Length: 293
Image (cartoon, rainbow, N blue to C red; front, side, top):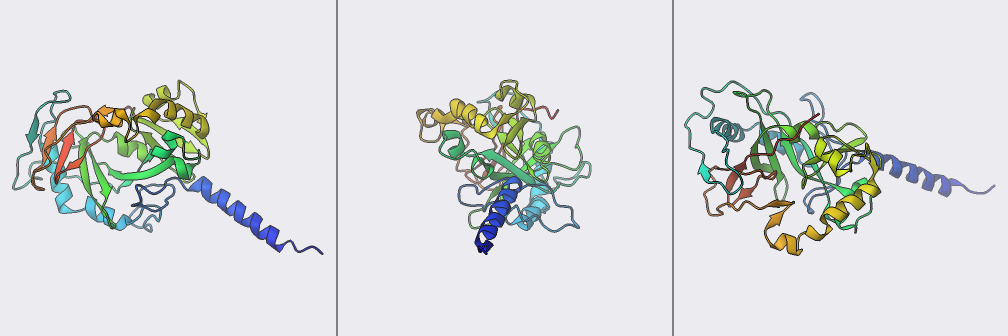
């Protein structure tokens, strides 16, 4: 009788790989993060999600007094109405940032995934593990505060862990990121603030920007989606003439002072979708609102 044990083992491995591929939904970000899978917030009674590296550090960050006080200071300061390039104002120090504000907490963070540069350039295969990467974690508030909500963005810390990268107006990022389920991936195309859901190798739009990004189609294959983003951005990647002229992710870059002390919070106007930690100062910009319908 022919020995089929090797064939069976190879077959099992192939099935296992295929199963993992349908579940794994994000990969390392700039060599700081390990390969990760489908993401959703962990309830306190549940085990920490294995798909987000150092998740306990992320929880500790969003539940810390420092981050809560920063959010309170942000919520106490009116968001500038000026357009991009408007004045940058310092958020005043407050002895009791929470005083006078309704009680709220910061929800557990969820993964914010983006398309990878290699996927955009066409050098990466149209596979979930090569097309999408985990770049940040985002959290919303447990309740609106004086009619406002906010998003807390965490960035990976070199060497491990997470730190506060930004606080921004609105909660659309966290709302979309939280739509990920077991076996699906939610990711953003930040250049147009499009949000998509990836089911196996099928990309479906979650908001109007994404629907426009797909040309009005209800869904496309991941391979066809790669062709679309390659046509849109391949000539705008880091190192391109577009990038060297001061544009980032399709938006004119808002330059912030890079010599401010870490205790100084700056509030800048503009429509940039990206909020940055620059020179130790958290730069808070007005977000472009996106429909969650």
